[in-house]
Image 1 (cartoon, rainbow, N blue to C red):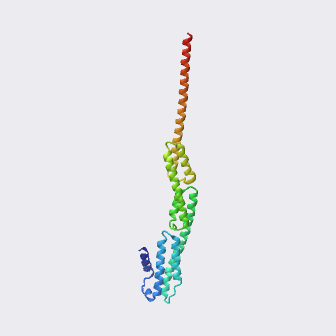
Image 2: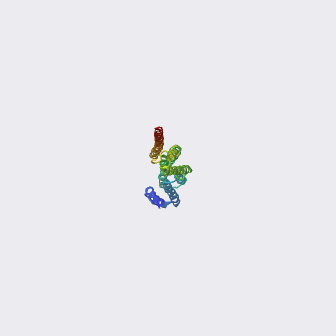
Length: 232
């Protein structure tokens, strides 16, 4: 439906004098074919710019082979030809920009910045049909799944094993995704819990020693008292 609407609008712009088409059916066939290809290119540009470029180039080739005796037919074809050339340059620039964004997204992922990589891939969605885009997106999803799993394990271990939780979270930051949402807060919480547990263990040992010394002192005192009673 979008293609049909685009073709109708295109003819409304190109052909204020509809009698031009009627003069030569061959011209009409060629122009209609080129217009349909151009409209399909516009639709494809949303998801697959490389394919859109192919369709636009095909439309250009159709018009470049056009040959008609009527100058008005040449004028009409010339208008569409100019539009297609401009569109072709635009698609070429977008394709080049998207390829650069995909390359930078891959670099961001290797730098453990998954949020940046995701934003760059979203910006280059017009090239989502390409092999490069698919490869980077697949690796991004794998890294994100691994980070989510480690964070899930850390959340479970936080109370009983804060040290293990902290190590898992630091693995996420150092090796997978240092932009993971809430990661710094989780690491801080794990460290605080770890320090609290260490303090509790140290305090327990301290009071064990104190109680041991006190008990030994009490035994010694009672022994001394007993010795004094026996000597008297």
